[in-house]
Length: 178
Image (cartoon, rainbow, N blue to C red):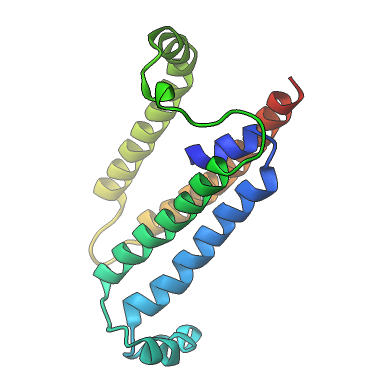
């Protein structure tokens, strides 16, 4: 996220979006290949079996999901760092940037703590509501209430991330115009 935010702040919003989309697409493809491998898979993922057979990828199950996620997050990160290091003009990376700038860090913490606290509170309250609903309104025979709440929370998260995306775009626009 930091690399894509840096690219966006430098005016490379399309590159940032490409890295994020390609990372997620790679995650989907690698999940199908590494989770199911050459073994049986749901029909929607049948395209992965011949490819896994050719590449001799075994069925890894849940472990395959972990490998797929790590690879799909690492490759766009490396590509983004490479793009940042090869940019023409503008700021370049130097060792001096690795030293902490205490004054700037204090200012950043002072500005960021209210929003960070709000997000942590939101997550804690959501977990509390889920625990209460799980304890009071669901059972092993009928988990439908908790399932419905989970779907609603996913939809809320989708809207929240959409808003955060617009906010990131706005901050990039302001940053590049300053």
